[in-house]
Amino acid sequence: MIQYNQYKRIPALGLAAALALLGGACSSSEKAETLVCPVVNIDRTTSALTRFRDGPGHDLTDVVLSAEIEKYEGDCGYNKGGVDVSLMVSFRLNRGPAAINYSMPQDLEYFVAVAKQRPVTAVQPPATPQRPVAEAEPAKDFDILNKEIFKIPVKFPTGIEGITYRDDAVAVSIPLKNKKDFADSYRVYVGLQLSPDQLKYNRAHNL
Image (cartoon, rainbow, N blue to C red):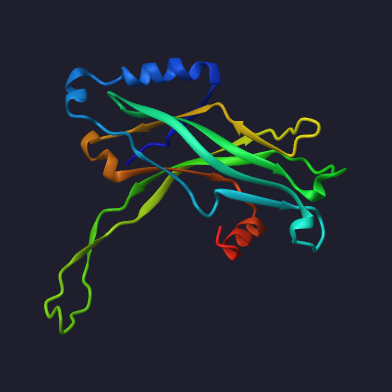
């Protein structure tokens, strides 16, 4: 059973050195096997956030802050115990019309989570005249093993309505038993940490 994953932040100035270490973490035999990094997904439903001022209003004039994940940069490296993944996430932040003279704290939170694929089971589709003998088809799903939340400050310079913020790198350490199966067995998810109302808003607006 996989142990809890370890997360830590790396200052931006230290990212190049960290990636250099990760790149050199594989032995010569592992490099020959062309080990791959785990798939990283920006979770679509939680990739954007719309924050409204207090009250019943939820139109564009009530928006205090909007944010979205623009992209991530990163790398990975294998070691004897597993794999280390380093991610640096960038956000686009925009001040809304209702932000003037609004005292609500504007810090945001985002998460990094690791998921493992469930054992593949055979799903038997119903037989049809065109396919009298139904063939078993694999069904894949993932379980979240661990999730870490990180806070980022939101500060707009005077007169600036929109900024891009790049956070320090986040290092995730994942213990592995079978490195060859890693790419097909694990996922790393990144998203904004939303309240139930914000998540409901995103789903209602197909975000």
